[in-house]
Length: 528
Picture 1 (cartoon, rainbow, N blue to C red):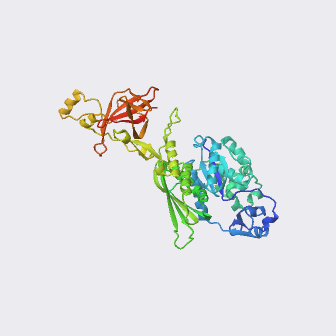
Picture 2: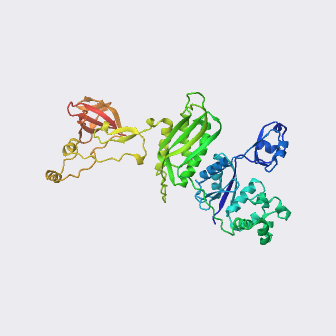
Picture 3: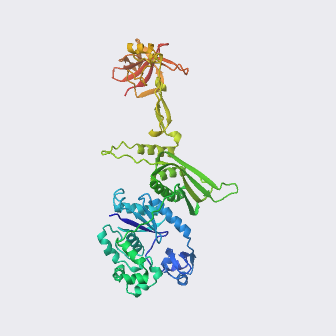
């Protein structure tokens, strides 16, 4: 049976009531309030006795230095949508519900994230990373999870996670009737008719409940207990990603800026999951507090990497390295994140027996991290070149992932060029085919007939001759046939060499060549 999870979001941490402290009376405190009552006090006001629902006069009597703040409905809705966007990383079915609550359909996601407990732990961590605290409830129905989440907020329920539908009615019956969404508009009517719990409400005659409270409460009870369908419109991620965050204070260090940017990155990860996409570049726009007349008002950082990803931790790591190498021109008061390069996400194919070295994406991420920390020009790799000269057969280039590597195109070589590289003579059939004008099918790369060493000297070392034998610390003996290389005439650095494999009397092997024009011997490499 699919289960639902509900998060009751609040911008401050909850605390158990304590006795008022003498030092708290002289401290300034704050509380959200409407035209008549307090909606949410901060920790200092809560310690002084200010509670949600307290009248304004009562709150001022308990906390003389209390400052009442008006509720910004638009900002609250924007914050709730930001949390919902980040939670799309866990399920595509996210619903914005009544009283600052986010509903998640997690029945199909539990196995993917390692079970219900691991999933709820990650959801809690994500909400905390967005800058909010949450009280969570889990039940087979949406309203059931909503009730358990708000019961945990008020600390009036011990069990807030229900998986089986058979135990749902038993747990919900023990909840107080004050949790009904319409209880605030009804006042204390439920208490006057003797209803203390939801079980008492369900025992009342249905016609009497409908006549006194309207038919909506009966429908709500049926949906909460799983006796009626509860269709809801899911939260829809926008077509393009753009997230903004107004900082609560002036930020002058990169570490504090990264802590705030984590909220935007979590939203980006949820947006990418909702669109089955990955990102390879984004822009971070910083709005500065003007410290001087000619100081820039905004600055932009572009962070790009090779392999598209939607892993929030990897994106944060790259952003941290970028910010650590940056000096802020002025304090930052607002930041905005824009996804520039978005591509379709191709999940890795699972195999029955995965090999530990088969994950190419992890190697690409390693190269990206090294490039971000050391600089792209300091992370290089060896690349083969189409050149027969050993010293020119490889070059050093900046590291690129495998999917961006340039495809090697076969190089058509003439008969004369093939002969100059010391390859085997052309067979009689091939010669007849060439004379007849038909195209020849030659191999794209010449396969050397002699072994090549893995250690090649950057500059060949000239050798002496003793008794007509090349000498390198000890006399050397040629143990291979000749491999002739004649190339490079096209760029003015032509070579004409005869290569040999040589060995000394201790079994060490060397790669030598003799220049055909001068007759000098050179050491060009070592065999392991």
